[in-house]
Amino acid sequence: EKVFLNGTIYPSDAAQISVFDRGFLFGDGIYEVMVQLDHGIFYKKAHLDRLQENLDKINIAYDVDQLETQIAPLLHAASLEEKSCLIYMQVTRGVAPRKHAYPKGYPATTMMYALPFSLPHINSKNITAILEPDFRWHRCDIKSISLLGNVMTNEMAMSQNADEAVLVRDGLITEGSHTNIFFIKDEKVYTHPANEHILNGVTRKIVLELCRDLEIPVVEEPIAANAISSMDEAFLTGTTTQIASIAQLGEHRFHVPDAIGKTTLKLQEAFAELKQLDSST
Ligand code: PLP
Image (cartoon, rainbow, N blue to C red; front, side, top):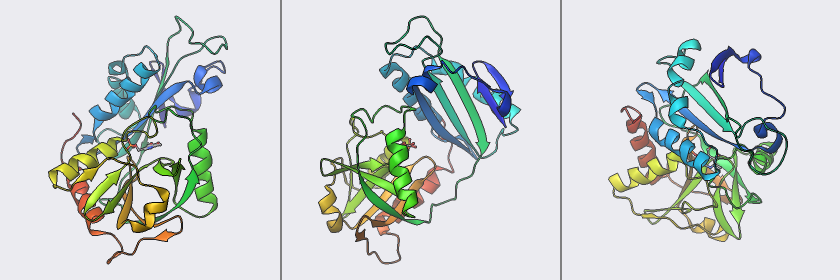
């Protein structure tokens, strides 16, 4: 396994950072996860643009184009060229004496690795999710490496043998611990608007595009936790999750013929087709 760190590719056990790295001390950094499929990196531009936008939001001065040029050498070194793999990228505010305010004149720390990883044609699981209070901060739009709230709520799901924790803020469903959530009622698709209370997923955006193509009406409004039982279908989205049907959410079991709801299945099939195309630009 190989790791790209600050311009050099190392065997993973030789890649080292300072304990004074602000990523380590403050969780002061941004990350991104994308997958390479048969036709290149899936929605590469959308992922790299999001990384740049997030770095800009927190004033880390780094040009993501520099990291992009290192993807091919990393995949080559890791023998993953043209193979199905997952690419993790992280940029932190760098190594500086520990003070809260942004230090001036210290270069960002850049890190990236790739692992063999493959996605099923369609995610055929029908998952169980628990409901948990969304006690995260109010800037969930930032893809911060500080993921403690996500880690804690995901752990609650794992410890109850569930697949995901779906979060509720002020009575409204926001997103999953590492996924976005969609509902379907009367053939309309509902999802939380892309504001500071959710991470605007690349997969979320793809699903919204697919809805437009398929002429499925979309309402970007949050669903109240107490309205779940009036919904017809629900699914989660994420880069590694793709589109995952939800069988049970909290106390509510969705009853749909053939287990996977028809709108969810339609979107899963359209998403699978999209993966057959080159969507890297
Ligand atoms: N919401 C959260 C909190 C996430 O961490 C993620 C992905 O990591 C997502 C949503 C889904 O985003 P994407 O579709 O870009 O993978």
